[in-house]
Amino acid sequence: MFTGIVQSIGTVRALRRQATGATLQVETGLPPEILRLGDSVAVDGCCQTIAALEGSLCTFHCLEETLRRTVFGEYRPGRRVNIEPALAVGDRLGGHIVQGHVDCAKEVLSAGRQGGDWVLSLRRPDPREFPLVLKGSVAIGGVSLTVATLTAEAFSVCLIPHTWQHTALQWLKAGDRVNLEADLVGRYVASLLPASSPAVTLESLRQAGF
Image 1 (spheres, rainbow, N blue to C red):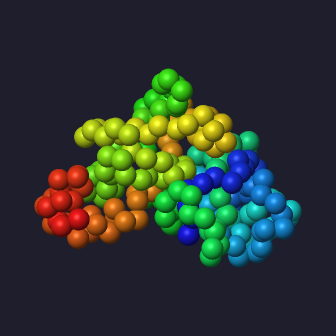
Image 2 (tube, one colour):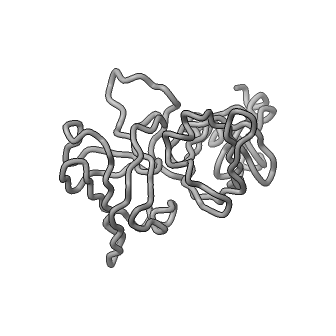
Image 3 (cartoon, rainbow, N blue to C red):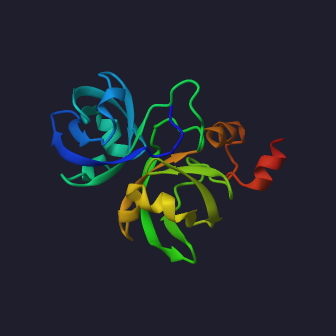
């Protein structure tokens, strides 16, 4: 379990494809003393298990399902990635509940400054499979953010300068793809709605009794 508050910006050292899956090596930038074999670490929002460890350099085994749903297959040495260690019991939940189970990867439509903040606009996933609600939570590249605008084709989030400067989102540009995870509560709410419901909206939530 994670909270969507990035602890460091890591660097991809290698991605080696295998007969099934791949081996991913990341210099996490985390203090070595907090890392142990078998620990969970979120890499760009995707929960991975430490299979080998040398200082803060972690090796992960990626499943085919992971490569299919995430941007991992696009990784090259030197790529900067968001890193968050698993939440410990008693830690502050500074963002929202993030499982590290990436739903899909979608295209960045634009990334730029508006006033004192930065705004990311992304192509919207299928509403029937990925619930989004205006002012609701969404994890983008493992970062807990709030939906600022929402249309049938796209959605946007606003980032304060601190978040922009201390996450790997700062290197995103139009055309890039980024990992997305829907809000856990929203996902379960969506599962309770009628199958014919076209999307999760404030009105559909009210009609369902929420």
